[in-house]
Image 1 (cartoon, rainbow, N blue to C red):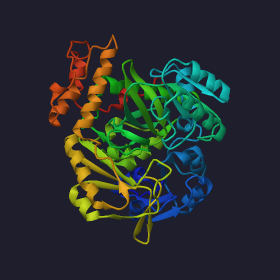
Image 2: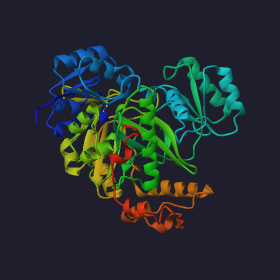
Image 3: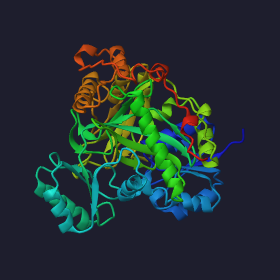
Length: 503
């Protein structure tokens, strides 16, 4: 096998996970990032500390380093056209073009794409560039609403009427602020109907024609235990060994895959062929699956749940993506549960966040705990590790069951010392039971939905949660008694089922 020079763009925990996987492929690694991530630096032959949106100089550096293939981890360089620039220099790149990355860069583009192509899972929405029009809509709309900037805000721009926004006046003020201050780089505001349900993430490898789905993951955006506090980029996440989630059944998972398949096809038909990782954030509601948003790359923290489960060579997958040659036969995941917990600076998620503080990472202690550490937005200054205003380090536990994976990740947190905090409830049975109860109550609201999840409840028994505590309607249904249901007891990522029509 010829050794490849591989460029990784980005310096967060997600990019450390990417580098970790590529290092197992015996690749020579190079990184372009705006911080001195200690974990990435240890794995690389050379690093370039540079603004990640300086696409021209990154491309020139890549040529000088004789890079064979590049992997873009984060969204900002994608929006700045890094893939187009690298490809122009003859460097194949895992990541969509500037045109294709609009699926994340503009929520208006994403919503319009779904509407134009009548893709299932779309919701009611309006986009406004005039304050008066937005105000009139908020005053007269009789449903609960969510207000979002059109562009990128690092997962922190979403505000919900009744939660962060207490009154309609608060909602009008926030919509006004978005338009006037160009929050998200657009003088526009997106107003959507509020959904009630459980969120989850489904990430897929995409080569323009084929998709291969990964295990489903649930992220936790709120800063503090109990799902309270400010929204963040994500405090941690978990996945289940069968690739589903405790509240998500196979039929619903497959619906998410089908939606992503239709999105990729719609992008291709628009001349925006999509190659890279496509992240779908979904809400499971009483009316079925609804689309919250798409990201044009791995999630952070969700990447750290799925990448360590890959049995397949990640570099081979990267080449298959750029060559348009993806096949589920070559992509395998270990059937294990994962829990990821972030340690973050004090007051992370607020303007009072404490940065440039020294933290201490006991690598031997973490190794002894069995967790996998992924360093994030840290700076290594001659061996002294400093925090920034963003997340510091993620710890991932892997085991057969969620509760065991949670214990591994939780135990490893003691080996990080400094002015930091974490959420301790992620992956714990009480919080997961709350999610399942919430979803089962919602399912009962829909007249046509007689089925409360069955298979995932079995996994709760394995996790020490008594199923009799769960609202459980085991009525007969075509799906529950079908051969398909019985044959789908095990995780199956069969990309041949998701080849786009006409290809």
